[in-house]
Image (cartoon, rainbow, N blue to C red; front, side, top):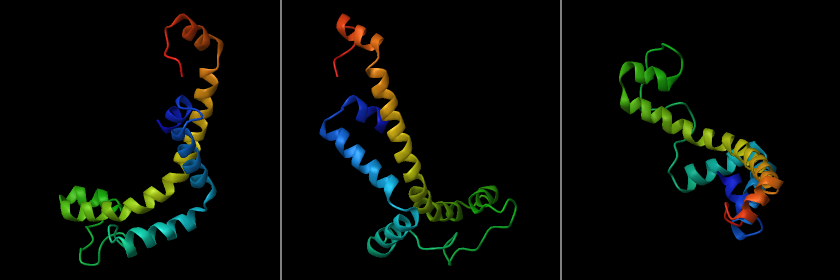
Length: 132
C-alpha cells in the first residue's frame, strides 16, 4: 500500500516521506533499532512490556506446543494469552520494519514501471484513467 501510494504521488511530499522512512528502515541495523525501540517504548513511554516471554507475575501454561500464546489459548487463559501477545509486539514490529521497507521500495518501482507503460499512457490519453 505504501509503495503504491508513493508511486502514485511521485515527486510529492508523500513520496519523499515514504522514501525516507523506507531508506531509514533498510539502513539502520536491526539490533540498534531493537535497542532504541526498547528504550523508547519500555523505559521512557512505559507502553511495552520488558524482556521475557511473559510477565513474572503470570504462571506459564502447561506445555502442549511450547508456544505460550497457543498454550494459553488451548487452556482458555485469556489473561496469559494477551500478556504473551504483548511481549511479542515489540520484537515483531522491529523485525518486520526491514521487510516492510524492502517491499515498499519494490512495489513503488514496479508500479512506476507499469504507470509508464504504453497501455497506461494510451488509457490516460483516451480519458479512461485519471492523470497522475
